[in-house]
Length: 307
Image (cartoon, rainbow, N blue to C red):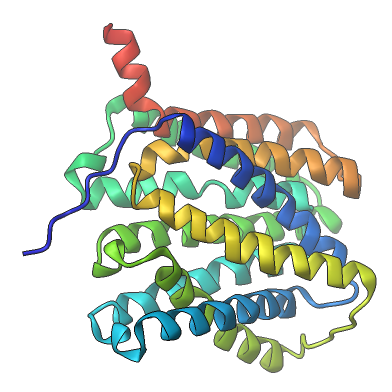
């Protein structure tokens, strides 16, 4: 009989690790945007996923052989691979229309989607009324940001469409967490979990790139630096660490720390890409972040209020 792993509440180790992860994740949209003139955004995702898939594939086969993929994790592995592909496909497309700062905020609504899905599936992840208030605040923030961007036509309409794609990317990421927590892959090694995602993403992204004609690749210094950062640091190292954290800490508790990512993302986009920040987006983004903090910190706040 399989013993279910017990997830711990947050501690100093989780906080320190999440700080580094958020710094890296916050900058990845900027890295993709910087290399977009040289390598299409879809091909960037395909290349970085392919690199990680090869590295992890060699490691996994050398360690445990091909038999490890017959343990019942293949089907959910393909499922999270499809969701992972959708997440980064939406991000890649979004960056063609909207600002990197906007993508940083809307993609990281993922804890909200994850909390909603886990609430329906796992008793220990049920949300309180206070946390439901956080969901409402976050979606009000999304609405305010959307209304401001869609007020006029032309470029603003494109930004609105890009923001919507980024929101879909956040939903895909959130539901990936739900699938992981509700399947046999929940107890699989982090390297194996990530391998499923990047292997499926490599195949699907290459197909999409060919079908849509988005295959342009020119290895300029900027493109090489960006792809190196995305492949080695973001896709390989940070996601391995993220899945390691998910196996040891409660998912919704980790989410309270992820609010730092869009802050780092917006700051880096403004500093590096000179993204403009209009009032409606600023107000909406702050409400989204507040909602994320409320949802993922609801139990902590409740305990402090009762003390």
